[in-house]
Image 1 (cartoon, rainbow, N blue to C red):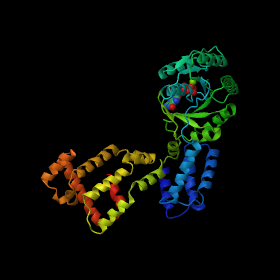
Image 2: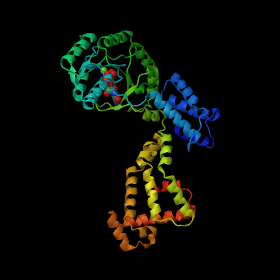
Image 3: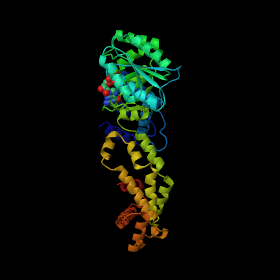
Image 4: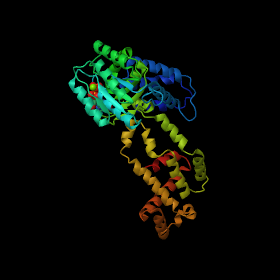
Length: 442
Ligand code: GDP
Ligand code: MG
């Protein structure tokens, strides 16, 4: 798999202090493949790789990161930056009603997204929303908008297939003004492909409506073609935002990068289900991970190194080395370090998809509960018991179990685990602390 290759390359780049022309080459080839596999358009890929190379070359590798890891970080950051910078909600800064015009190919998800946006604006921004369909070519399209608008709790303005889209738009605008609507969402006709007449029609609609938002709705599964579609719409209309739909499908979503690059408009939302609540604010960083298919490896690396209290870990190691003995207090300290790393499940979120699938078989919640219970047990012991676990016999066990709210068997299990750990500690003489902590995670 791609990730395996990248991981191997990251390893091979170890021990090199900076990113150079030669060590960056293989790495970038893999990134290029990843982008093409994710259906990012070729010219966009070329551009992107050139930019990354520029940024990466000669860069000192800071701190504990290896050049390979640093490069992955640069790639990820650049991807996220290309696709957007922070959250971009719908702009409603206009004399009410703020008009939102929906544009895109047939089947892209315009009608569905119109209703999703209506719901979003009603619930999150407390707006009074009116929808209208200018799709006079398919009679069912008007009915479809009526149905989904109802689900969204938005008012729907009736239109009929014998009307002209321009007249529908003007009538709806007039109605929205008279009835004090905050927002008017205008759904438009689907285009099977770029069609000059239909393009002219939506340009006219734009001219009479003067929308504050002109959203380009694009299907994430469209892949390479998304570039041409986006270019055509960009030439016809001053796009203010993009909605990327069907991200719940199995596409890697490379269209996001292409469309963003070609239109220059921010990706505002992502469609993640057919249902009316299947709309999310677009998260560029998360999407970068999806496109590369590798999660946020660098963040993971940083989180792990930052989370472990290095000083405490070294103290512990020194202690074991000097033969001072490893007691239950140290055991507790280790448990707490594991928690400090941000919790197991938060680490899991950052793993590449392929790894997560495998690790998904491990019940993370259970593992975390387990750590908490062990902590509880040790906390129910006296200071003396923690230093000298051999003191803990039947009566003490019962007392500790009561205090921690667990069965005596669990106290036994913990003591056994501690015994094993102590044995291992003696053998390792303080080295391999990380290895040990991994073991403890199960
Ligand atoms: P339009 O022709 O652009 O108006 O597209 P529609 O809104 O009618 O959507 C076309 C199809 O795509 C419908 O079957 C929708 O249910 C489906 N659809 C739209 N958005 C999404 C999405 O985010 N996820 C999924 N799975 N399906 C979607
Ligand atoms: Mg439609």
